[in-house]
Image (cartoon, rainbow, N blue to C red; front, side, top):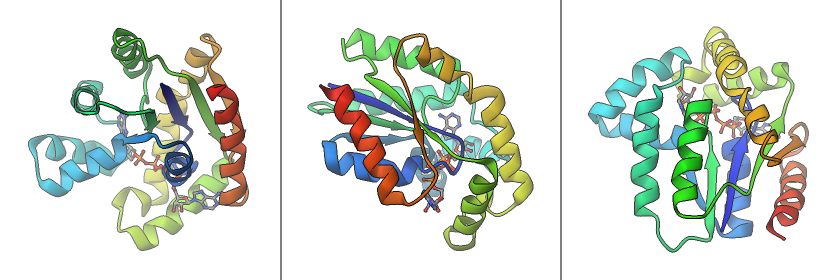
Length: 192
Ligand code: B4P
């Protein structure tokens, strides 16, 4: 099985590039951001709880996100593998994911980090905010808080996966199709 963690700060292109990887490698897409937004849209208890955090640019508590991922993994049989997009975002989430996957003897194959400069991240998110209606993309201060939260809580995962020799840094600046090509090359290498 090919299990890829697609990693990077907010606006790095995770959701954008996940689409290419799913198509190219026939993987299942698991985006915690998308899952949380659909819980909010459906007005569930989980969605109501998550919304308070997301609107401020904070992470949703590990217990909420982990419960959601466990349910999704349990429901996904017969897959070639997963693209984990926006998950894990804390060391605690990464440890739980490792335990879950190791139980099935399908560990993470590699963690791909999209490296993008801060000013470019802010630019991309503000322009998505103009069309998407996502409130967390519409204010520069909320975006900066998301980047700060990433630096504090999510960035340490680079070391976590490096220690397992599963870390791959990818230049995430430039044209979307060129970045997709860079990712494809690395995934092909991991898959061999
Ligand atoms: P996510 O939905 O994961 O939000 P994101 O990081 O902003 O999205 P992404 O990085 O995928 O967007 P992309 O760059 O593709 O999370 C939202 C919130 O949910 C979090 O803040 C948190 O509160 C919560 N959450 C989610 N997962 C969680 C977890 N595991 N634990 C706790 N909380 C969690 O796209 C950005 C824009 O850039 C797009 O408009 C795109 O078109 C554009 N773009 C992409 N690549 C480009 C390029 N090369 N050039 C120009 N523009 C580009």
